[in-house]
Length: 61
Image (tube, rainbow, N blue to C red):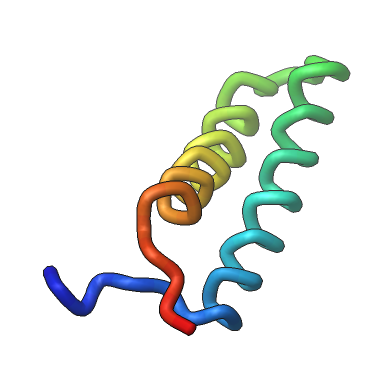
């Protein structure tokens, strides 16, 4: 567990994934087409996990 840190390129990739998933979550929530709850969960879970990783894992410089 002591080697659990993020490098800047990995953190940037996670940030990009969080932004894309968060945008898709918001679109599914606003438009509410058929099956929007499943799409919201599909995009919301990776966005939440990515934000938790970025928030709590240290950045290795």
